[in-house]
Image (cartoon, rainbow, N blue to C red):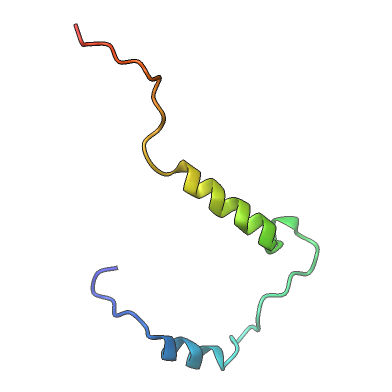
Length: 66
């Protein structure tokens, strides 16, 4: 984000002292798609993202261009 100024840790902590107008999110148990991820699910997602990065593996054999 060009032109935006980063917020400091102090500003974040100050903002957390006042709850949002609509309150904090609490899952009602009805929509499974809105369920917060568990720590195990978050760790699996992070691991999957790390594995996707970088150059894909090649076949191991190179052939000269004709």
